[in-house]
Amino acid sequence: MQISIIDYGLSNLASIERATKICARDAQVAVVDNPNDLDSADAIILPGVGAFADAMTNLKTGGFIPKIKTAVADGVPFLGICLGMQLLASESEEGGLHPGLDLIPGKVLRLQPQKKEKVPHVGWNSITWTGTTPLSHQINSGTDFYFVHSYYLAPKNPKLIMAECDFAGGFCAVVQKDNVFGAQFHPEKSSTAGFTFLSNFIAQI
Amino acid sequence: MLKVRIIPTILLKGAKIVKGKSFNAERTFGTLLPAVKVYNSRQVDELIIVDILATKEKRPPDFESIREASLECFVPLTAGGGIRTMNDVTKMLRAGADKVSLNSICFERQEFISEVANRFGSQCVVASIDVRQQADGRYLCYSHAGRTKTSQEVVNWAQTMEALGSGEILLTSIDLDGTRKGYDLELLKLVTKKVKIPVIISGGAKDYDDFYRAYKAGASGLAAASIYQYTQSTPSEAKKYLAKKGVPVRI
Image (cartoon, rainbow over the protein chains, first blue to last red):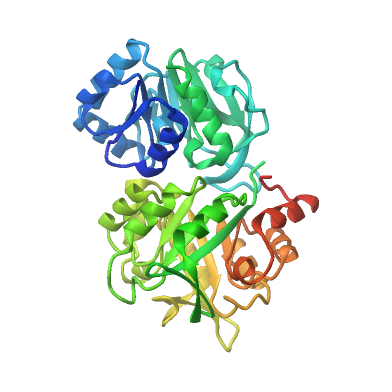
């Protein structure tokens, strides 16, 4: 079994690679910078630290987009993390209006802080499950994960929202559309809870 | 509810962890990896690792140490010290840091903050601001590990850093650093009143109640080193204390 983590030149790869290796048990974990390597992937992780426009540019010039779409159409479990989740959208308003992968119809919007809240949303915050997803196995509502972002994905179809985080009026923390998953938090930075989440994703293979 | 963050700070001189008073006279406290492992097992919310010699020695930061540390660290890691170019930032993030802390370079080229924020996002950028209180009561900023006094007053500088795209501010009182006399809450309130981005307070943490007072004064993160290195205090106990006082913390 092969879990591929896409390297598109922007992300913190060391942490997600290590965390995935710990959770993967028997599966091989590889960071891939060649889109052809996605052909043999049984699961794909799209990590993300950075700005939306740069990320899409890098994915495009790296030749990843057609391979991602093929893999998803073939039913390969696909997890976007943080910026990676936002890239699943149809478009983002970060730094202008930019098109995304359009795997989860919806828009990426800027968080609107309420009262004393500050943006970026940085720190540990709890999620509440609002939908049924295998990613929630052994993770109770109210569990804290580490968030660090200024934008969020708002799916067009609210039924795709699997978990919400109560910040900036509430935003989608976990999204799922068939075999495409997204987490706005960083499971690789969320200690034990994060490991459980990653393990739940890997179990989808 | 967003939780307040307990953030131990590790200062590096080469491979060794050091801790001094007011940025001077450091003692050695062992090496990096064991410390990271211990903190990681102790419910810390984040870690900050600063290479305090990099700028002075005019060399790039020690990426390899950060890479090794990140392999044992499953909470967010902020790396600082000697980061001066986009290449430094890219290498830091690829080595495993989640955020970069920038100080001296900002006084030479303010635009660097914007460049990093535009490329990697504000959430990656921590503006590290070291201050000393002057005789007339003002707080002035210092660069180069506290060795170079600038003419920048702390509130102006914090607002500049915010406007240029910093995601957070790491605010350190050089005067109180290493003294365990208590955080400078006046300094903290001065800044938190005037910026909207999260402020992590550092320098002088005395005891668990000090963490509580800093939270009430507006701190989003509570950075400390000496309190963990010189006393029996632990991050877990600190959080239990804060939770009992009704502070939102991750338990």
